[in-house]
Length: 261
Length: 341
Image (cartoon, rainbow over all chains, first blue to last red; front, top):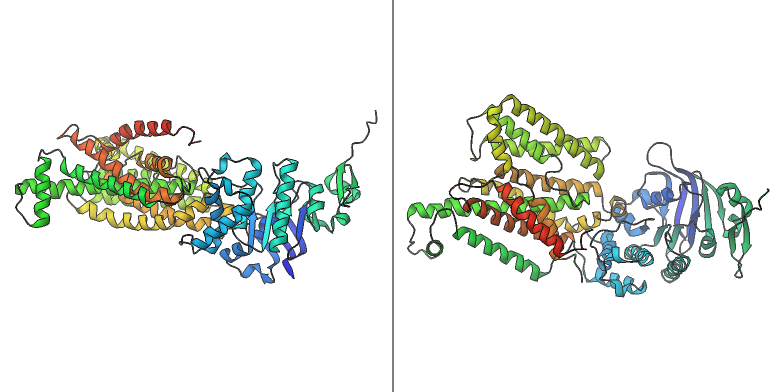
C-alpha cells in the first residue's frame, strides 16, 4: 500500500516553480529522505505535500487525492514539523503539544478528555512527561525538537513530514531523535518523509532517498544507489569518498585533496 | 501547571473585583450624596421601600452615576479585549486597538464633523460619535483593503496601518489648520472622556461589545494556534487569514463603539492584557475573558479618579489612564522580572 504518491508535482511561491517534475511513491510505513544541496527545493517540496505551498500535479495520501481534501482533513492525514518551529512566548510544553489536536476539533470547540489522553501518551512516549509544565523557551535544543515532534505526533496522522528534524542538534541528540522517529514509525506504521542535510544519517535511517538539485529530482532509490561519489560530487560540488560502516550503510565523507603546491 | 486555560477561582476573583469596583464607584461621586444614603436608595428600589434621597438626588444616582460607571466598564472592556485580540493576531506585544487606523479614522471624521457642524458640542449621541464610529471602521477598512491588495500577511497589514494612519492624521491636521477655532474641541475629544447623558451610550455600546466579546472568546483557542505562525497554523488545518479577518472585525467593531462614546483613550488596550498575562497566564483563553473584566475594572477606577479628584471639574480620562496605568504597569513589569522577554 502506498502512504504517499506524487505524480509530476511542481510547487512554488508564484512565478517559476521552485521544484518540479517530482514523481515518487512512498510505501506506507517506510521512510523517504529528501536530500540535495542548499536551495534545491527540498523544503518547498515538503511544504507542498503539507498543503502549505501551491502545487500542480497529483498528490495522493493513502490512495486519496489531496486536492479533494479540506484543510482539516489534510491536517488529519499529514503532520508537518518545520525546520525552525515558532516558539510562542509563555507557552508550556503540554499546552503546545495539545495544539496538535486542533485538526480533530471543531473550529470553536475545546479539547476533551480524549485529547488530553493522547497528549499524555505522546509526552510519555517522547520522555517529555517531566517537562510538561516547562515553558518552551526554557528548553534545550534537543528537548525543543522533541516537543515539536510531540505536537506533530498529537495530530495522529498516518504521514509525518519532518523538515530537517536534526537542525542545531549535536550528533548524539540528532541520533536519539532519529532513533525515536524510527521507533514511532515501526510501532505505528507511520510513513515518514524528511529532508536531511546529513547524508550519513540519511543513509542509515531512510529506506529510500530522493536527491533533488536545482528544483529537479535527479536520482532516487536505495541509499547505496543514490549515494555514489560521482553523484554527490556532481550535485553538491563536493569532493567525497563513500565508505561503508560496519553495518553496511554507505557513509559519505568529505575527501580533502592534498595541496598541489 | 497549565497557564492556557481559565480556572474558575481566577474568574471568580476577577468578577468579584468588578462587582466591588462597580459598587464603590456608584456609591461615591462628585455629588456628596453620602454612600449610606445611596445604599438605602438602592435597597428602596429593590424592595419598594422609601428612599432617603430626593427625586433630584435619585436621578443623579440612576441617570448619571450608574450609566457612567457602566459605560466606563463597557469602554474599558472593549478596549482591553480588542488590545488582547490585536496582540494575538499580530503576535506583537505593542499592538493596540488603534493600530490599524481606527484612531486616525475616528479623529479625522470627528474633526470634519466639528468643522462642518460647529454647533454640536456634545457627547449626546449625535453627529460626533456617529462620525467617530464610522471613521474608526473606515480607517480599519482602508488598512485591510490596502493590506489585501499588497499581498496580505501580518507584516503587510501592520505597515498598511502605519500608512493609513499617517495619511488620515495628516488630512486631519490640515483640516484643523483651515479652521483653528475647532482645535480645542477636537483636542478635548481626543483626550478621551465619558460625559454621558443617561443610558443612551450604554445601550448603544452594549450590543457591539457583546458581539465582539462572544466572538473573541470563541476564537481564543484559534488565537493560540495562530501564535505558532501562519505556516504551522495552516499545517494544523486552521486558515490563518480567515481567523485574522473574523478576530480583527470583531475587535474593530468593539473599538469603534468605544471610540464613538469616549474619544481616544490610550493605554488600556496595551496595559490590561499584559497585566493579565503576567498575573494569570498567556493562553488566549485566559487573556481574552480576563481582559474584558480587567479592562472594565481599570477604566471604572480611572474614571472614578477623573470625575472626583478635582470635582466638580473633570480631568481628561486618557490622562488618568496613562498616569495611573504607566506606574502600575512599571511595577508589574518589575515584579515579574524575567517573564517578559
